[in-house]
Length: 268
Image: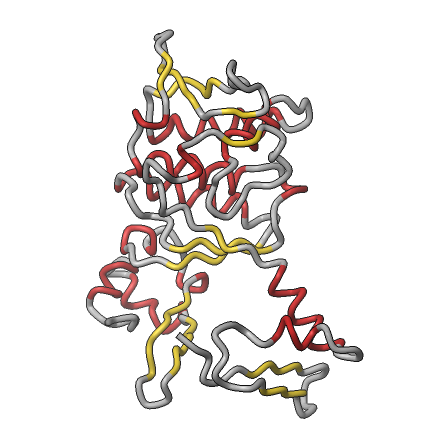
């Protein structure tokens, strides 16, 4: 895959002609980082730094070889990594911090909502190497120690998402982008997921890409963007929803039903 066209624009004030810069085509990666190295490229550098501060989280890989299922360096606990690879270390640091312990407890409570038998995480440095830690857990009323090989892919993803969304507000990213967070979740867990996203949205902006009708039902029309492919222009188009235009429809149908009936758009 190569970039056939790459352009950045900046409009300092409404009504003014935007500053536009087009990079050379045919590159396998964005030309923006290289352009930022040139002197007097303040706009390019501003755009680059903005994009650099937009973490994208995807917890799809929960295979046996995935970092999230294996031991991690115990001091890698400053922020949650995009693949959840340091989940054990991050939870360990949160639990052992007096100010952040309440957020750790909140994460545990939300996991128990979708997995009632879950008791707590058993977070201890490895006996063989105290510089590493594994994400183990125990059931309520049992002293048997479980590992992550004894938990479903969906629950493990939910653990990572809960940790991301319910972490202390002061360390939340300013923007969180989640790609298909509903994957592998039980239908009843979708509403819990939406509730966590709403909590996090008080302190940061949340963008979720989803194909789940159940998740769409958890949000108001004004919080939903429809993305469709425009084959003539060769691009994706984003469309906002107007609640007033949907008032009569919503008296009879849910958001997911309107989606499935192609009232909202967003069809293949």
